[in-house]
Figure 1 (cartoon, helix red, strand yellow):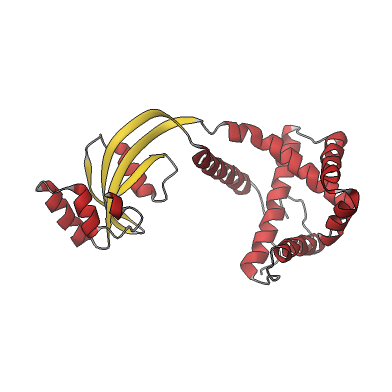
Figure 2: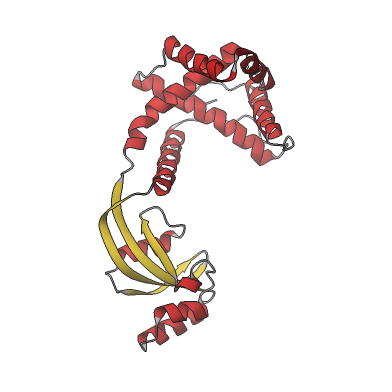
Length: 251
């Protein structure tokens, strides 16, 4: 039950069959993994939340819009292939029209969310040395304080195989784009040329040096797509947290 709207076992089983048909198309076997089944149910929950949010905001997809999308698919693939695809993915035409309705309303809902992701952002250029123990990190700090070269110490100490050969250089990154948030936070908090103390993360212990800032750097497309994905996931999470979801089965 999603805010009082039911998702039946029959609907779930058909959606699971569609997911497994997609796996088969990729040459993969059907999965009975509980986490996979939960993923399928989560998709149905998210779809229900999107429908409800669209209704709350008065956003609808017209029958003409739905027909236009489907007609475009048929034009691309041919009617025989399209009908075969529907059957292979366990859709009646009525069910598929509803799926397209959900997709169109989802796009309309997400337009302002995606538009909020900037095309220009503040970037920082930083480098780091990653070690496995705090004791090693303190050794590195002492040698840096004695005037030794950061890049040379990165090559000697760092266990980050992707950056140690290039002096620990992390390149330019914007907020929310680095895989280690603790390093990102420190890099943005320092002045150019400043070196941090020991920074702990799930990977180990870092020494972070901020090199330079750019307050208005163009966001490259790969980074923007990652940021868009993060914004969408946060938006979906907000919908879930505001919802009353009662799951009647455990996989």
